[in-house]
Image (cartoon, rainbow, N blue to C red; front, side, top):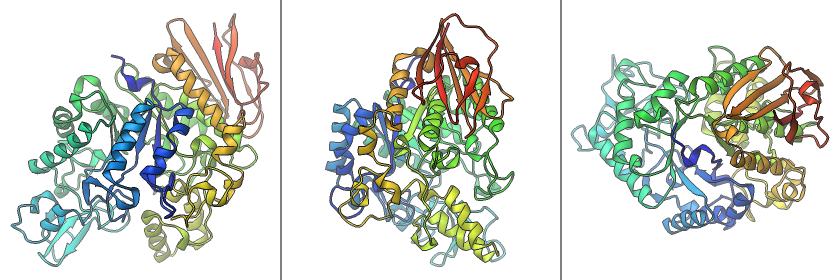
Length: 542
């Protein structure tokens, strides 16, 4: 595989609304991000993935865009955006923009025109259908509960919205839509951005009349055209959000010979604590054997053919230390363990803001304290179906999107140093103990562990390009694997539980050294030893 700059890069996702507020209005903004670039430089990341900052009425926190070539007033101006790009570039950090082209806001000028009449030139920019027997055209559901069809009285037709009814879906069967999108993408590429993260990109090939939403037959044709007309002419990173992907599908997107994307986000591991065939809110405990099997499959089946992305968290997912770690007694150990497992695999690691200091899930008392549209819709939907309030809240505490969206905890001052105003979403009360200032000053912090993991990736080709071999596949407590490149060999061993676990490895090594551990006094004989709760060790072996 031809080597690319993003193979040994580490990406940091910023959710701008919650990162840093520079003007005391309680909402994070672009100037706030600029203020904190030196912090990100200290962490060692190379790329910022910026969740949407475009003009938006904010029905779905910026994923409902009303102008792709302007900035949401709460976040600042285009001048601020230009300054962020150049200030980041000055520090060797690239900005990857969030590309949302499955749908727009209903306040986008295209949609305002589209709904005026059936013969409006913009009508076919969106998906309109006649009623069937006086009702919805078919049974496509919205991701945010209910039908994906909304009746529009003005013209007596329904429009499609796979998300909120204020997020009408673009019609990718219309070549004019392609042209508009490519012009917009080139506008951003010309500003010197480092690429795009593509929101629900697997949905743009939908065929609504056949109820096909993901992975439609023309999807890859569209992506190859997009590559040719836009980012294919630049040395940038592109990553597609693709919820239904398998390794075979992933190769269609990211085999370099196909000229589509650099990589995708696959979510197979993310669904492992949800009941089979149910929604994400229907919980079950994680089985470590399932997790190992999923990672093993993606690591081995993509090796040499396509590139992996590696992540535990994002703005849609709960905090990993609360989800599969232990955010109480072993918060520091388990956060470091989870980071170690992920960062030593093949692929580009993504860190979500606050993950590097071990931020945790939030438990709001009342549903009224939550902001997220998906959470609120689900709550109302389940209450109406007779679910118990307590059970619904437990699902929200475990999986709700606001777990990731509480403001970044910078210091122990009021509101965690995020704002001098009133924060748009309540700050997690544990900010007095868990914050950036404390983490930077403690050499044994989760933050410094992340710094070391990033440094290891930069210095060891085995981490970037080595092959992956899972060990102890049937061990229900230990996650262990080997990475090897030429004569460089690393052994990664991690206890995934809060009790002591034995790990034994039959191979004999003449030389063993520890590159990194989350306990100060890990054993050099640990290749065969008892591992303490959440202990994770990276060995160099010969």
